[in-house]
Length: 283
Ligand code: FBP
Image (cartoon, rainbow, N blue to C red; front, side, top):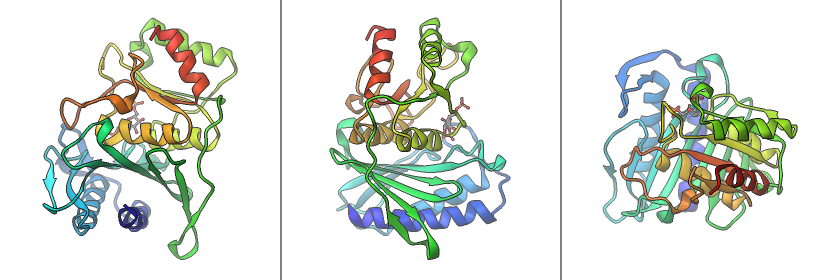
C-alpha cells in the first residue's frame, strides 16, 4: 500500500503544476454522467490513469469521469476509484479543489471492501491525507523542492464549530432546514466553498463540525458519489474519531452501491453533531 501512497505524492505535484499553469477552459468532451469536462478534468484523469497503471498492486481502476472499470494488472490486489478533480466548478475562480482516492479490495466495491482512502488538496499549500482502516489519518504538506513533510495525525474533537451545509436550500426538507438552523442557533459558523475536499479538510483540521449533502426534492439520492467521494471520506472521518452516515442513520461504510456512479445523501462530522442529526432525523 505504501508504494501506492508514494505515487500519490507524484500525482499531487503534477496536477498542482497543471492547475497553476494550464488552460482552465472547457474541453469539447463530456464525462460518464453527461457533465461538460474542463481540460483540467481530462488532463488530471489521464495523468492519474497512467501513474496507477504502472503499479503491480493495482488490478483495475475506475474514474469518476468514466463509465467503465479499466482492467490494469490481472494479479493486482486492489481496484482504485478516483475523482480526478473534485470541485472543478470552482477551480476557475481560484478556490481550493482536490483529488479523492478510494482503494478497494478487487471485486468488492463497497464500504466493507474499502481498504484505504486518500485525498489531495490543491490550495495555497499542497496537502495529502491518507487513511487506513482503524488508524488516525496521516497528513502531509509539500514544501521546498516538492518534498512532503509529515504533519501530526488528524484527530477530531467530540464537538466542533463549523457548519458546511450543501444542497439547494429551497429543496431541503423542513426537517433538514430546522436541523441546520439549530446548529447556527448554537453559534456554529458557516464555512461552505462548494468544494467537498477543502470543506471537509477544514472540518478535519479545525477539530470538528458538520458537512452535509442531504437528499433533496430535486436530488432525493443526493449528489455525491459513493465510491469516489462519500466512502473514502467516511473512512477518513471514522479513522479521525468522527462519524459518517446517510439520512437513514446507516454508516456509509456499511453501504453497497448499486452501480459504480451511485450517489447517496451523506453527513460527515464529529460525534456531537452526528448525534444531533440522528435526533433531528429520528434515525
Ligand atoms: P464534482 O465531482 O462534479 O466536482 O461535484 C462535486 C462537488 O463539486 C463537491 O465538491 C461539492 O461538495 C458539491 O459538488 C457542491 O455541490 P453544490 O454546487 O450543489 O453545492
